Image (cartoon, rainbow, N blue to C red; front, top):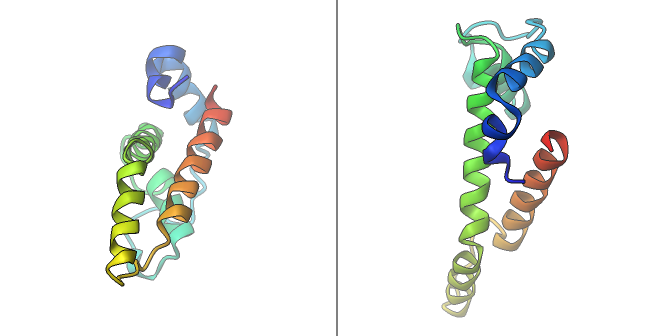
Length: 117
């Protein structure tokens, strides 16, 4: 199952109910305060629970965007690896290890699928 099918396969109301139950509203970051000072983890918590007037719906948006980004990198992984190899041949080294980046994308996608399938 593709996680992009979540709203269709499980029904939007089922996912909303799940996310509403998961969203306790006890976030440390209840407004747009000092987002520059937040760690990445705190900022992700803020995005998921701490700012939207639409409540748990924002969680679906964040997860959908995350999934689409992961899918994009996984779909073009051969191109990314080829480009990385070409750059290395030219003596250029990427700041980010592309193989590790792709592995992180695949692992994260797998975790999402395990949770929601």
